[in-house]
Image (cartoon, rainbow, N blue to C red; front, side, top):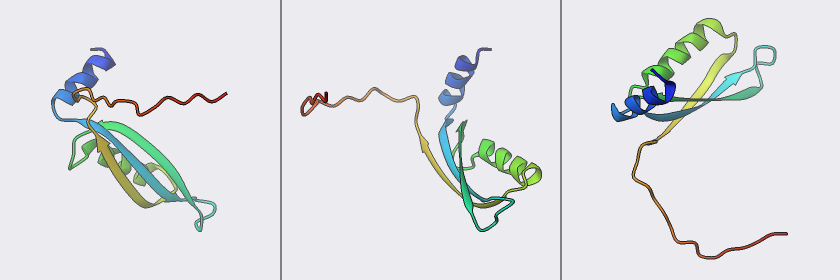
Length: 91
């Protein structure tokens, strides 16, 4: 099955694009925080794919997690449009 077909199938089953901002302590400098952004189709509110990734992180990556912020959006949705209030051209 093609990846695109699988993506559409997952979205029809309720999966949505989830974005996680992962803050972690750098292993060599624990006082510094670094950001990692993760995106995947996932099923809210349990987020099984994100949980699987975070389990992998805890077991395999030296960096200690600080926090995880999650947002999601529907990829399959009716089209939206808005009228332009004006057109500006920069040269």
